[in-house]
Length: 470
Ligand code: NAD
Image 1 (cartoon, rainbow, N blue to C red):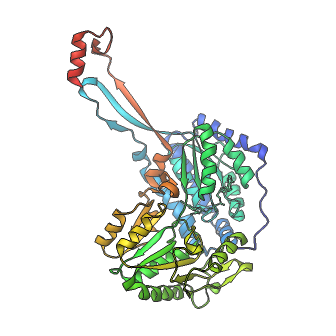
Image 2 (image 1 turned 90 degrees about the horizontal axis):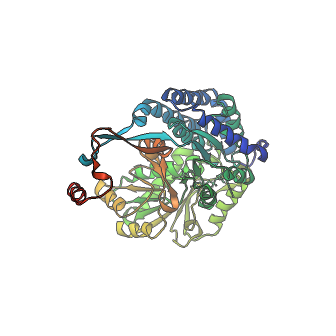
Image 3 (image 1 turned 120 degrees about the vertical axis):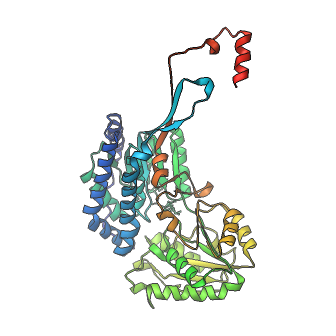
């Protein structure tokens, strides 16, 4: 939305090294090492979300016009579920993995110990400004790390509330916060972390990867891309339209795994367009601008970018929507038909409430269309199981869902992440725990017997024996 509260003061650049140093000292002092300490920190995060609910919902409304129901479900409730899931499974996740030792090395035992990495840097974007810094924090704390968070300056109210809540609920030796924009993030990236998780666009993803390379710091990049929805002739069209419209227009289309565009088989093209139009009406009424359940575009820059995509044309008609009001950040839920693959709206991730629908002759053509383009973050297929499996089996994407959009993200034990240009690494549930853990291999050998076969001098009999037992 354009009407924003005054931006919060940014973190003083000179203070940033000390914020990271505090988290490092905390890690060295073992403040989140034991499972009980980790559970206690997760409980703090739970309390922060419960005590801070009103402030967070207010900030999400101010930054993005999010309805409180949507904001609760996708930001606060989502993070609470991640906390509860981590708490419930922590002992199992943290348990050492037993590994079989080959006969020739016995007597010995081998195990893989899941150890924390150290200090995790978490850099978040503006579209789910709460969830996308706090869900990685759940994984970081569960795995026994300390962390420094950097919320997005483009969601200024959320950034301010998060900074205040974290300072109130956490010891800076466990979780620190840096607020600010490019200068502050650049200063933060100059510090050494043990892992960096960045969520946002690929351009800044490259900046993060360069900065991390200086310290040989491993990274997780949660990026975006154009996630297609394929609607095949066997689909239940009313259900497909509802689920696509829901996924697309949630948070006014500003969701990394929103269906970016639709490829629909010719046979069901017209019925799908009708059903999409109906779904928009059912969800947001005659005038979506008046719906309390419809969000706003984050700022003028993105509003101009999105209306620019519409102005650039390359499509035959607007099926529904098209209206915009820059002053309030409103952009109507919009469905476009007869869209050319060369249209501006098909050249970049839309990241807004514009849904291009492209007709294809058949499933093979849809598969080719997807396979020719960069691997997306998500892929959705509507239709019978066999056709869906064919589409999934012939393409690559970060995640996929059949007869659903977005909901794969809500299954805690499905790793969430991209592939290639849509991201590196994944988190959520145990995948998050493992992402922020080092799997340390430990061999523990008995002292007796201590046969001389491994030791020089390498006589013939030793060489023969070594070959025999390989
Ligand atoms: P953004 O502009 O808020 O940037 C994210 C972070 O990068 C911010 O904290 C910002 O301060 C920092 N930053 C910006 N420019 C920088 C620079 N030059 N140097 C260092 N740091 C810098 O968010 P965004 O990138 O506009 O977010 C939208 C993108 O994020 C979309 O592409 C979307 O698909 C993707 N996304 C991905 C996921 C996911 O989980 N994979 C989730 C949400 C959004």
